[in-house]
Image (tube, rainbow, N blue to C red; front, side, top):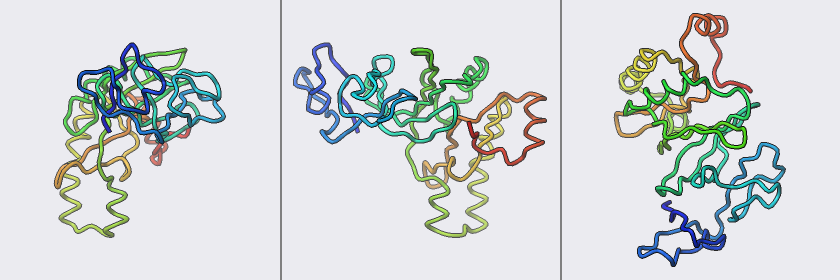
Length: 226
């Protein structure tokens, strides 16, 4: 849903109505829309459309542009949010790390591999109040797990079509020295009839001798339990 970017004279109420101060008003959040507090200690993270969390006092906007609208996943030391970038009125995915911050080399490589058309682009990374954030492109689509649950067993031809779409992505990732580590149907999204996207970099690591030995000793790695 497109959202009007904030203007200097905007008030909290403006977040729930059409902005009357722009020459070409855009649609804002509906009145029943709620934001999600970024604080890991907040006891009531769902909040109304105000600039500050009414429960813990945390600002509900990062870098004066990003607002979380849904919690997508959570581990021991990180969380993933569906968010809105109010600078360009688009949705994005934000990964929040309050511990175990990603290596700078890893972030650089994520920017590079994100140039592949079947991988989400890394849009931004920053630190705010001692917490590190990665902002990625939001990819909309039905994942493979949902299609399997709906359609049942795939034909051999359909399986080969998926492999022919996904395997080149893995080759691209490995060529750039990364390991995804969470390849599963839930992280494979259909973008078109014959093209798939690979998402969720929360478990990605650099491809080193040490990391390869660790994976070899625990082949059921999957999603990191933090």
